[in-house]
Each structure stands twice: as C-alpha cells, then as structure tokens.
Image (cartoon, rainbow, N blue to C red; front, side):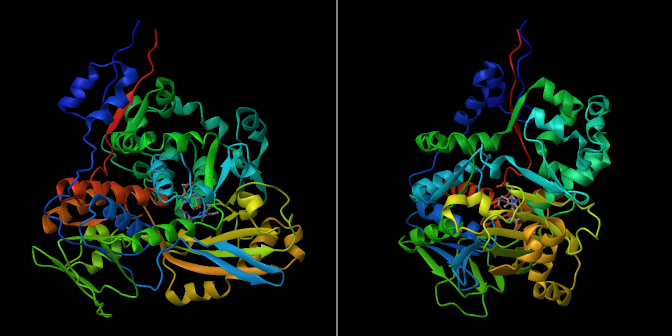
Length: 561
Ligand SMILES: C=Cc1c2[nH]c(c1C)Cc1[nH]c(c(CCC(=O)O)c1C)Cc1[nH]c(c(C)c1CCC(=O)O)Cc1[nH]c(c(C)c1C=C)C2
C-alpha cells in the first residue's frame, strides 16, 4: 500500500497544491525549481548607491555579492578600524625557534551545512581551492571529541558500538534511560511558542542530558547558556518534529525528510556550478586554510579592491544613520571623505549596535544580547603534550568550580586539526567566559584579560595535566572578543519578525541587516545572508535581510509499500 502523499506544511500556495500531486521523490527538487531564484541582468532601478557599515565577513561578503549582482552601482564599505575581516583574524607570533600562526576567531568550516555550499561557491570563485586543508571523516579531529565532566575527559561516542561502550562514562549517567520514554511523552501545549533548549531537553529527556551534554555543545557554538538559548531558533527541525509527530522518536520513525524551503532554494542556486568541486570533497567533514581563516577575508578584500564599483573606507566610525525618505546619510566623527549618501544601506554590525545608530532605536534589535569570549592561543615546543588526539574538548556548565576555576568553555587542539601544514609543536586554544561572564563590569573584564594566559595555563594543568604541568608555553596570544557572539535567547524568532516589520515600515526595505545576530552565528551563515540579500535587492530593490526568519518546510516522505 502506498502511504498518503507527502505534505508541504506551512507553504500554502498554488505551487504547494501543485506539488502535492507530484511523486514524493521529486518534491524537494520541484520546490526549488519553481521558486524564482534567478539574478536579473540589470539590478532594480531604485538602487542608485549602496552603503555597507562594518568590514567583517558579513560586510565583505555583502560588498562582494553586490559587486557581482549590481556591478554598475557604487558600493561603499565603511569600517571603523584600520583592518578588514572582523573577528576572523590570523596572527603570527615569534618564539625562540621561529614563528607560529594563531587563529583567534573561527578557524574551520563545514562544507555540508545548509549554508556551507555558499562558502564553497565563493572559495571556488576566489580560486582558493589550493589553500584548503581538508579534514576527512576518518581523521581524529573529525571523530574524536571530548567533554570534560566532572573531573575527567569523556570521549563522546562516534558510532553505535562506541555508544554502548560509553555508557559507563560519568557523562552518560541519567541519559540512556531517558531516551526510550521520550517516545511516549505528551507533546507540548499549543500555547508554548518557544522555550529554552535546557527546558526542552529536560522536559523530553532528562536534566543530566541538558546540563552535562547539551550545555557543553552550546558552549562550543554560542558560548551561551543552555537555559536561555531558544530551542525554536537553534533546533528548528526538532522543535517542529515534536509539534508535528508528537515526539522526537516518532519523528525519527516517520523518516520524514523536512528541509527549510529557503535552504532548498539556496542550495539549488549553487549546486550545478559547484558540482565538480563538491565531488572532490567527498568524505570531507571539515576544512580550514593553510594560512588560517584570514585567507578568505583577504581574498575577498583583494577582489573588492580590484572592483571598479567598490570603495573601501577604513578608520571611519559611523555615529548616526540619517534617513530623509530618499537617501541615507551618515554622521561620523572621522568625517570620511567619500560621498556618503546612499539609496540603500546595510548594517552588518551586531543587532544592538545597529539599533543605536538608527534615528530612533528598533527595540527588538536592542534586545538581542551579545556575549564575550576570552581567547587564549598557546604553543608548546613538545609535539605530543596531549595524552589524546581529537578536535578538542568542551566543558558543560555543571563542572565544579574546583575543576574549572576560570570558567573555561572549551579547548581546541589546533595542532590536531592542521597536522601536516603546521608548526611541529602542540598548539591549543583555550576559550573562557561566554555567558559565565555576562554582567561583568568593564573593569572586571579587563582584569580577566590581563590574567588570560595564567588562567588558560592553569586550566590545562588541572584538566589535562601531564606535560602541561611542567612545560611553559613557547608562544602565547590573547584577545578579549567583546560581544563576539549574539545570543539567540527564547523569543529570538519573534524579535527578528518584529524587527523586520519595523525596518520595512520605517525605511521601506531600503535598510537591511546582515550578520551573525539573526539567522546563524557561523561564517557560512553570514555569507549566505549576504548573498540572499544581494539577490533580493537586485531583483526587487527592497528587503530587510530578515525575510524567511520563520521556517517554512518542504517535506519529502519515505514511500512504504
Ligand atoms: C570565538 C569563538 C566562537 C565560538 N563559536 C563560534 C565562534 C566563532 C561559532 C561556531 N563554532 C562552531 C560553530 C558550528 C558550526 C561549525 O562550523 O562547526 C559555530 C557557528 C563549532 C566550533 N566550536 C569550536 C570550533 C573551533 C568550531 C568550528 C568552527 C570554528 O572554527 O569556529 C570551538 C569553540 N568555539 C567557541 C568555544 C567557546 C569553543 C570551545 C572550544 C565559541
């Protein structure tokens, strides 16, 4: 018997009704083909001049796509500091035997995430393929990950057999027994429109899973608090599965392949030109660049500097954005000497900073909090100081203070990620603070920054021990990354929807926001948002960047006979 036809929930258009009559296997493909995704030969006539505030990856990517999709429109990229690249920063530090390169911000990328294809497409167009370091799924950095809890490193399972052997580890206590009951638990009341990840996991599984495992994973991505971050925004598919199928277990058994429609559309636009490149990346789960992540931002910068329609202005702080109904103008204490009247403006600054620059604040933007991470890079001459290999380890919020006195969030084993392309010693990054330090005063943060290296070294001595107890680092680097990671706390989606409404109403879709504050905190998420906005502006001349914040799903179901 053929099961009932698949459904396209939430997409209630004539396209959807037509799609429902088609066979399940062609469904996702049809959605993307029928969504008009083309880039016009001429950009929309209302676009006369574009300003972009912020020279990090979001600003660079926005300028890059606009230089492609609107090549005759003048684009001005304005950056407060003297350098471009934002949090993406690779730095060389000397030691008595040579130099070592450290990455301070993001350092690796995943090719197969929903946004990853956009970054690959950019890398191919910038001709950076030979600069890539590919990490296959069999490499220790790809499969060996650890959580430190409560006083030792627990290796996370990476297969079904290792799942069973891991059951004796402290980290697995109270987890296995919560898996099967989840299937039978009632679904959430319809009135619950969002909740914290911690509350969701505790409700459906158990508190130990939320606070010992998931809290650690969220430290590694958001440096955020499991009890504050939004389930709906961080795990939309799981959130939907509970609503649609009643439980996550039932969702798994239904084997429904649901994908956000905008992911399908985005990937369809890029799949064909990158087919060969993607084929060459089979089996690769992660990649980085031989000379660090700055390879990417430097290449975009080079390309922009050779584009006739792009002007880059650095050391130009913007104080205020003004809007007279036709043009944006910018107030700046540095009075930069380029024309700065724009028909269209993009702010790539973190949401609350954008809100402050506007003629009057957009309150939903000011309510998106930011968290600060202290990054400490350490290099030791000995090549094998670590007793284990792998990507590194994360610390959940439940590690006792005696084992984690400086509130470290995690440690990355950089030398295991780069291996043959790197210096021979042991290179690590210790990340501290995040939500643990929310609410600290400027003076307290400065004190942490001053003691950063001591805190990182002591953390390694307590948690890893061995050679770290006796050997001193040969080279160090530190950076307090103030407000580097936006926090998608409960109600984030609603805040983005409200912000979109306000931006549309006040600026008619001529002012847009792009960046990590909205639809994903990763490098690829920012690149994708920049591309999507550039396509929308080129086609329609308006857009806020916050279209598609609420997920609409394309669904393909397994056919059972
Ligand atoms: C400055 C610190 C950052 C922390 N998270 C991010 C940054 C930039 C953003 C981020 N980190 C990860 C993802 C998931 C997507 C992915 O590409 O894998 C995102 C969006 C995972 C991740 N976590 C760490 C690393 C090295 C990676 C890979 C991606 C990257 O290079 O950033 C380690 C790590 N990141 C943070 C902490 C506290 C931490 C701890 C070891 C915060």
